[in-house]
Image (cartoon, rainbow, N blue to C red; front, side, top):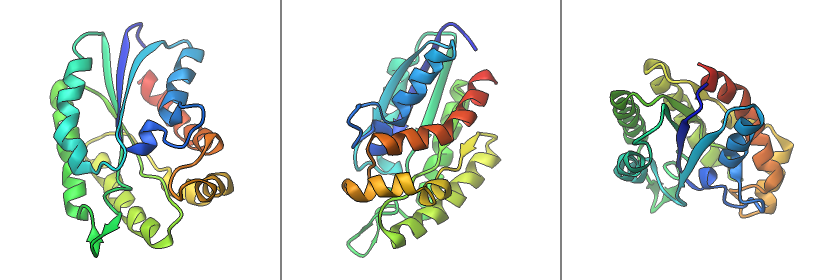
Length: 199
């Protein structure tokens, strides 16, 4: 761990923490936990609602270049995919091959800059067919990260089995949980997060 850690959390509405009355989401909870663990950091939440991996690919590098210019330890946390697997006009918004290519492109560009990456899987929503598509993308993303030697946090299946997550998603807008759900996903990510920070 370093004394000048700077990090961008990049992704969609789940990264932004939509639905959380505490306005922290899981990214804010992890950043707060880092301070508790004695690792202060400068964190930037770059989550945008409804964005797919293609949308994120088009913007992330410029946004991170503005924020990760200085500092001794510069890192990225990525999470997206639920919007890719959303059905619109009879098809998914982004085809699986394109989604995986987008992720591979981001990981390659991050490696070129020397920015370590932690990738968090796309979580489930209150739609069985949508979740089945996301589960397949989750497997693809895991392979891409394994090939790139990037740690991958497999939260999709545990959250699908989580009564707390699914209850809050159903009580909300059908996709986003409240504070309890974000507590749940943050707890799943936390062990991987600590290992990654100490690596």
